Length: 117
Image (tube, rainbow, N blue to C red; front, side, top):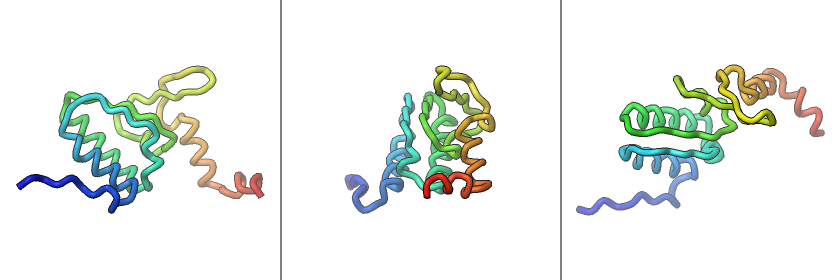
């Protein structure tokens, strides 16, 4: 019996993306993901981290992930490079500007929101 393709139009953008990653994760290779957080909730981002780890654990693959998400940047053992006006530099997760910015916002959203209204 032939296997049918999933009906992506019946799923959310994030669910479709995660299904595609899971389905293709059995093929080793180079994975380049550019801001996948645009499709994902925080729970979906955690699921993507699990998929990335599974891909890497299977061997024969490398993942390059470009993100503005502190969740996705937190993959254990990842080499993290921060890009800015200085070019790019190797950086610890807790030292990333995006992590500091999110922490600051979550501590006191009103500090940021008062500039908008």
